Structure formats: structure tokens, C-alpha cells
Image (tube, rainbow, N blue to C red):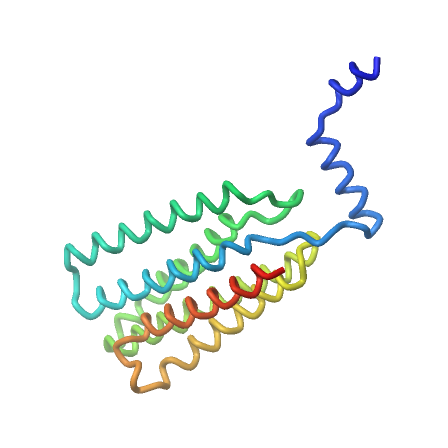
Length: 207
């Protein structure tokens, strides 16, 4: 009879129920959240922004388009590999949906400001796009860090998002004031994000 009972038990459902009970009692353990995401996202962002910068400087070139498509495809494959090895706690926010929401918000802002971009010279149009997109992405990171507090995610992972958002916003605001970076704004932002994300990965991988 005990054998029949053991066969009827759904291990996944039981594990979920136990996590919910522990959470309700304040005993839930703190889980890591996508810590490998940082190194993949950092490297991909640095390369993509560099390619975009060359696109802006040189105009459309077949090799730039091929490089851009290749980087995007490679990054997506790497992210799929990361996702396949990640076992999130129950109900945790989905990283892909979060990224899509941030991307959509940035797109809406840039499309809505198109008449403004067209009234500016090329340099100021690039600066406005950089600051606008950086503000949206930075706020998205900060909000994600706040949101994860409700899902038993480790504090260090939450602070990584909050710190990352603050860093992106600070970079976006500062870059237009640095004369040496004129014409290389996106490459500089990408390098700054890659630096932060790589450092974050190095820290989180030790926990």
C-alpha cells in the first residue's frame, strides 16, 4: 500500500507546496537569480553597441549588417543555454518578459520622439536617443531589483539589478558631457555596461 501511495505522489507538486508553506512561515531560502545572465548580457551588449556605433559612423555596410545579425544570433543561443541550466523558484518573474518589456518601452520612447530627432543635428539626435534609452533601461533594472524582493531572491542578486540600473543611468547622463566620446557614445555606453555586468558576474559567482 505504501508503494501505491508513493507512486501517486507528484514530486514537483509536493515541492511547490513545501516552498509555499515555507514562504508563508518566513522560512523560505534565498535563491540565486540568473547570475550567469550578467556575463552573457554584458559581453553581448558591449559587442552589439560597438557594431551599432560603426553603423552610425559608416552608414549601412553589408559586413556591419552581417556582424550585427551574427552577434544577435550568438547571444540568443548563449541565453538559451543559460536558461536550460536555470531552475528558478516558484513564480519568479521571467527574465525574457522583463527584457521584452524594457525593449518595448525604449522603442515606444524613440518612436514617439522621432519628430524631435528630425529637428536636431546628428550629434544631438544621437545624444538624445542615448539618454532616453539609458533612462528607460536603467529604471527597468532598478524596478526589477525591487520586484525580486517579493520572491525570496538573494539580496545580492537584487542589489545587482539596482546597482546596474543606477550605473546605466549615470553613464547615459555623463557621456554627452565628455568631448572625447563624441562620435563614440554608444560604444562607450556598451563598454561601460559590459564592464559592470562582468564585474557583477564575478561577484555573484562567488556566492
